[in-house]
Length: 127
Image (cartoon, rainbow, N blue to C red; front, side):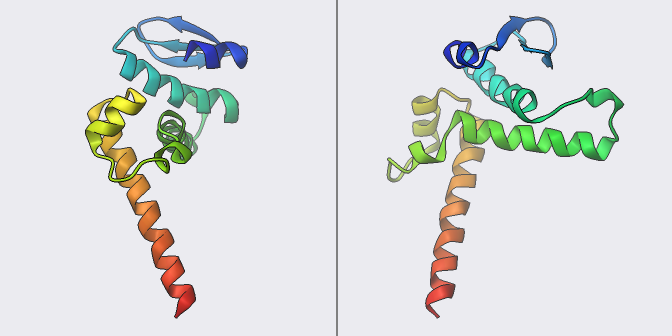
């Protein structure tokens, strides 16, 4: 996390609330897993979003939060790395990528759904 932040010229700061301000990503001191997941979420805001969320229409804010959650799953547990393994369990994902159980479960479900969708597309193109 710190190596990535340094390469992107981002400072990681610890406070009592999580947010992004300029080049700072502010995290709450927590477990390494939770900090990693929060970093992934806030990194999306830093890389892709501009403006102050408090001044945005709630639907646009909800969209940005959805995008940040989605990015965090793919950033913390990259697809190209999942593809290197067969028959992964939630515990495998937790241990390999240092994420919490719920996060690993959701990411594994996303990945398996992607594989099923790709298989369905291949079958449809054959018939």
